[in-house]
Image (tube, rainbow, N blue to C red):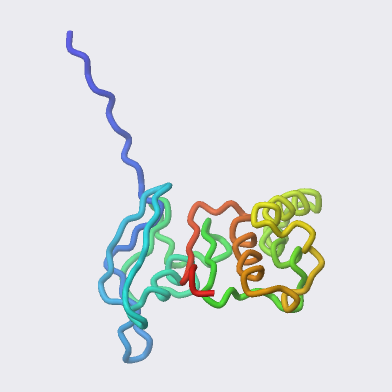
Length: 174
C-alpha cells in the first residue's frame, strides 16, 4: 500500500490583476498589468512619478474601473463592486480625512456605514486608536493634529474594518 500526499487545495490570490488597462481620455495610465498577491503577502509597486501606481491601487480599491481587463479579489472579478462592498481599505497619499469630523468619528465612519451597533463601534474605534497611540485624542478636530497624528488617524480608519487587503499610497510621503 502506498501513502499518497494530501492533495493541495488551490488557493485564490487575495488580489489578482489580469491584463488590466486604464485610459483617461488619450492618456494610457496603465497598460496590460497582470499580477497576483497572495494572502498575508506584502507587495510594493515601485516606479517613477506618473507611471500608474496610484491608479492601480485605486482600481484594486474600487475607486476606478479598469478600461480593460479584470481586478479580482479572493478569486472573484470585482470590476463592478463599489469600494464600500470590497474587503479592502486604501490609505490615500493625501489621507482624505474628514475635516468636519473629530478623530473618533473619522475612525468610526466606515463602521457606521456597515451599520454596526454603538457599542461595537465604540469598542472597535477605541481599539484602533489605541493601536496607533491616539487614545485621548478622540474629540480633537483634524486641524488640531500634527501631520504625523493625522496619518495615524488615517491608519486607524483603515484598520478598524479589519480589511483582507490594506492598500497604502505613498505610505512614507506624509
